[in-house]
Length: 215
Image 1 (cartoon, rainbow, N blue to C red):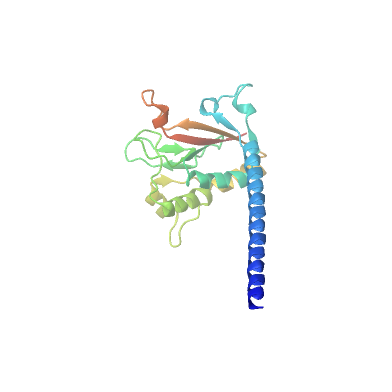
Image 2 (cartoon, one colour; image 1 turned 60 degrees about the vertical axis):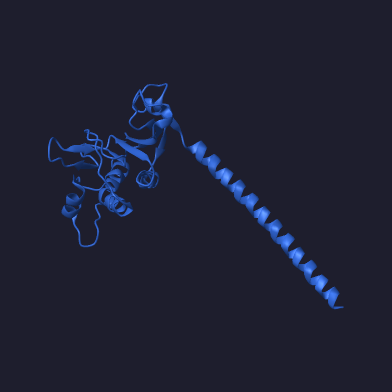
């Protein structure tokens, strides 16, 4: 009698294991199917073009490869630029840049792009951001003109060596879309950092670039 009860328990355990395994396999299959759908959707929504076509405006190239976007797309892309190896360019933003790098020697540099690539010593320099805390603080400043507790705009500009425009990038883009009826087109592409003829492509760092053309 005891052996029969024990056998029933073992059979019940095996049955529960088989049911659990079946549910896990089914769930995995559904998750994989969902992931495939998401990836397929992303691939259909995302258009990559070679960087050589970026600023051309003929019928046969860049202007055909575009999509209209809003702030709900642009802001996350800006944050991704500072987490990944991206460069974001704003074309048609207006007379004021996103920010201006103040130089001790030579003219100040007006920036219409966001890039984490280290300073090269050329005119196309970027702000040095040592860690994620600095990245978050810098983004809050240029996007919303919001600063850490106990700090103001002067503290921010002194820390990062920049001059901010009259309003944050978020409000400026919002005004262009809502009050000036501007449309923002997104163009995506790829290029190589420090693209020198004598360096093999395999040794170059590939970088994605997103251009937002305001028109």
